[in-house]
Each structure stands twice: as C-alpha cells, then as structure tokens.
Length: 100
Image (cartoon, rainbow, N blue to C red; front, side, top):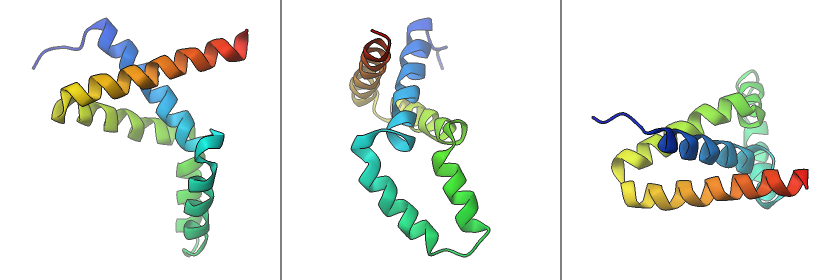
C-alpha cells in the first residue's frame, strides 16, 4: 500500500468538506434532508434525537464522508479521481465566492 501524497490529502480533504456541506447545509439537498428528517421523526426517542444530531453535525457527517471517499478511492480509483476533483473544485469555488 502506498502512502497518500500531499495532493491526495488536500483533494480528499476538500472533497470531504464539500460532501459534508452538501449533506448538512446546502439548499440543493434541502428536500432530501427534509424527507430524511420526516422519516427519522417517526422513530422512537432517543434514536430519533441521535440520528437527527448525526445528520446535522459536521464532525459526524464528515467522518462518514471521508470514509466514503477513501473507500471509493480503493474500489474505483478513476471514478474517485473524478468525484474528488469535482467536489474539491466546488469547495474552492464556494469558499472564494463567499469571500469575494
């Protein structure tokens, strides 16, 4: 197994940030989040409370997003390159547009 390069770490990190934001915050996924929360609300407490927290916590979602990206890198490297590049570029563009 080869060690990740600094470029790999940067791309994975930016892609993880962007994927996490898509899940917990972005308007484009608001309808999916609302449907997920509707289903979660049907569950008994404390499970519903914990799942709601897990889907709104950037630290919680971030670990799963990073895991998904790393699994994708192992199972489908070419697809992973495309997706991480896309997510990383979107992350950089988003941060720049918020700051300019």
